[in-house]
Amino acid sequence: IDAAQQSNNRLLIGPEIGIGHYMGQATTSDEHVLLLKSCIGNRALGWDLLPPGSKGYEFTDSENVTWVHPGYGGSPERWRKGTAPENMTTSTWYAGIQYDGDIARAKQVLNELDTYYPGAEKYEIAGFFWWQGDRDSRSEALSSHYETNLVQLIKQLRKDFNAPGAKFVCASLGQTKKDDVGNEREILDAMLAVDGRFSSSYPEFKGNVAAVYSHPLSKGGSSGNHYYGHAQSFMNIGEAMGCAMVQLQLNSTQTCSQLTSEVSESPSLSPSLKPTYVPTIIVSSESSSPQPSYTASEEPPEKDIA
Image 1 (cartoon, rainbow, N blue to C red):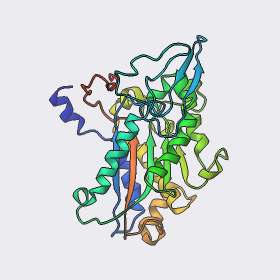
Image 2: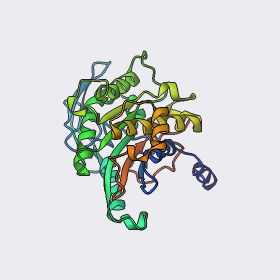
Image 3: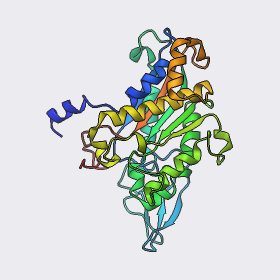
Image 4: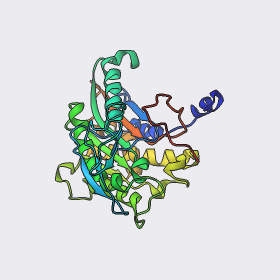
């Protein structure tokens, strides 16, 4: 990607603008919200972003070939059952390497809080946003295991940031409809399964995990082409994610428009976001624009943009 294209990419947005709008509405005038965003394409929850504690498994594909997929820290991404894994000693890429890197970089910012947020002395991890799934949807194995990995991700993020009460909001791929079939539908079903507002699959997520169904909010395209760079898609989905987070923070069942109106009129409605801290939200999302490819041979570059 040339310098001019990289410069143009800086003008594009992801869901963080819409998220920030709703989070800003839900805080008092003397409160501040810090969003830490990690965003790069061609990363799978079932491989690059696999959280610690994830176990390996075997998967038999539609051609009746059985593959072994490693747990956290393992390599390579997969190998045929009964054969020896290749590149185990030459590749530095392993299951969870992107997760480890993202967590380390977020913690570095928080450890140097005054550098990135002058005057701030302490913070509270208030929640996590997750908009991802494109890479996993391209694999039978990864999509079928997405729910297991998503549950582990929620638990591990809370553990790594010592934030057991932090809320979690995920959003589905914008092109996937509820009546679709195949890999993408499995990604959507996994997200709906962890939504503690409407699903009873995980009682421990009741009142603290929400999922946004993105298809009605998308203006076309797909995760594979970054929704054609349509800003309204990113704003719509970002605002829906932000609203869901506010609903969790306030333990409210009000609609987004009701929340925006009432919170702006009465800032005291946000008891869970105190001005003694900088409420901090970790955001991970599908890339909103093409990113420069990495040159290290062991790191997979972002997919080409259609």
